[in-house]
Length: 81
Image (cartoon, rainbow, N blue to C red; front, top):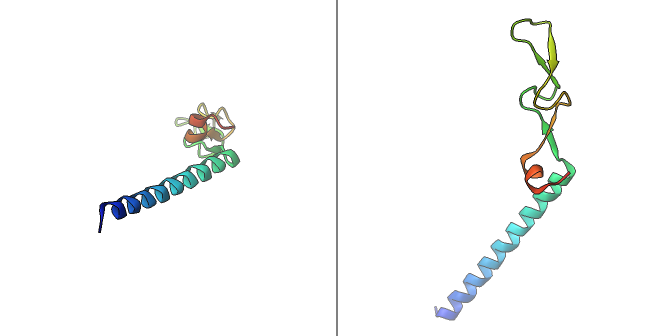
């Protein structure tokens, strides 16, 4: 196997990897565009927090402000909304 054959094989593989990475990034970006929000982990998507001392009382979740949703980290990083 000559040097030129090895370099050609390396070029083909690196191009294929670059195309696959580009497809994965594009798919992730489109997914963020369609679904920019996720359920709030603190209130589990309900928007309310129960009191630990009084079981019957509750208030709005301070993390999601009562909506039950938070912006996903990728959507926040790429500024997608």
